[in-house]
Image (cartoon, rainbow, N blue to C red; front, side):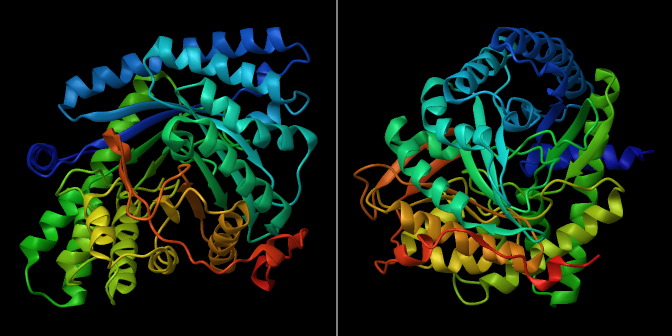
Length: 451
């Protein structure tokens, strides 16, 4: 790839004025060669490989930051889903492996390692069941480990046994971690991508090489500034403005990702063009939707505005790079977006409206806080609804939900940093217990049979 000097200057302007950064460079590391029937040998192999690869990764990322003057907000690692490599182990042993990963992250200065994961969209092995069951105790014992479970896909349908199991596990996770903070580091998926650089859902897929470097860009502030500058234009013109802006930030993101990969001596994987907000004003997806013309996020028209944004970002990103992957869309994590928080406070944004909006953007119900007395069955039913949207539309959807014990509607929990402020949102009082307790698997839709 070649870059014009003017592109570099424009990138510097976006960085200084419009809060543009590279949200993460995530090094994916396969742990398949660390498999062993001996827990001690497995831990030794993991530690050796993570520290060796991670040290080079961090050094290379810092050199590239200095070279281009462009901040890389997070340096992360993702690993092969542990339930695949260590299926023979059970809860206590899997937690020991997580503790090994956690100590590596602390030693390296990595903020998060993703991959405490299981892929159970069609069924669960004993090892996968043990991994999911161990998540609450694992989160209570570690600081840097993120976990994910894929419970549905367009090809397989929805594993409702896994959905219910996850619902019960989330209740335990909330109870066993301070202020339910463990819930912020766990996500349940439908159609999970295997090259996602963003936590909590990052892991290194089984089809990936031994190591690879994936980059996740950001840039809501850049898009917001472009929309405001465009002023009162029609939708076609507005789409062009967003598309061109996405093109620019994708080019910058791929440049940084390729340079880090080159210096690390690993293959470049993908650039994830997701617009990831932060709690800072001016860096908000909700503000973008309001700049497009809705009075407050969640008002009528919000879903259409989000569809326009998501599609335009994808078109611009795919024009800029041949290697777009991961999630690649607009994230709408409630607690991590100042405008979303304001929408909840105003009453314009509800869980039901968020669910509708997830049908046209990436991920799903993200960083949504609900009352502490929400039942496992209701949590499972909310997850099943998200999975249904993903299965039928052949897209990734997910649920990262927080249920702090004793929390009431309207309470505010400040997690600080990127996690932001979680406002407890109301959940329907009507129950779906009989639906969830049927068990089994909802079959794949006809569109899943496309051979």
